[in-house]
Length: 220
Image (cartoon, rainbow, N blue to C red; front, side, top):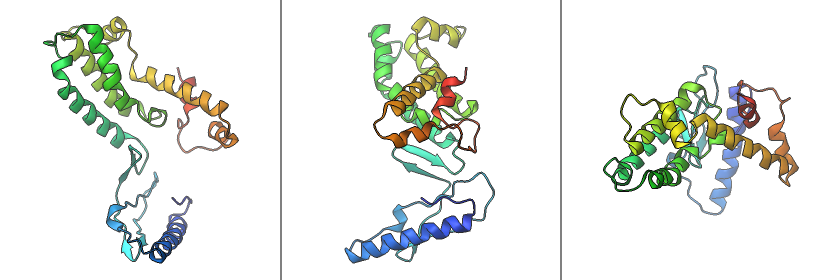
């Protein structure tokens, strides 16, 4: 990863690091496969695409990359990640429909428990980061959340989503965002590594209006 306001400088710094990695790999006779790597330019500006190489092979350029289960798009809007999570949720719901559907002999309590343990962890993963996305992107998950609750309760169309959430005593996606963000902030404040407190520094200039966990906790 290379960070700089100027794309040319950032690319040059990255290429120098890749050259060192390539030299180390050659020394230890390790074959690097450039096709299994991805080069992404993270910026909100319009830029001319550049390229970098490793072992004289060009690394493929893409608009997004998957890292540790998080889909990172070039503008960090989290739309790609949330769309991928929605597909995962829909797939999981189909697999568990025989247990969560209206014909299932399970009680409502057990259906809700199954949903909380098997499906909610899918979309809450990394929520401390993607929870800062704009409302229209978070709504991607909220719609799947609403659909799941309707499946579990077999609720007719005239029952509102608010009624489902209130009767089932289950929060909206934004409620989960604030809960996880609050917990994340507390862990950072109590962490033994003092460097983690820099993540809570509100004086550092930020590109986005909301890109820190404490913003989500304070947003009502």
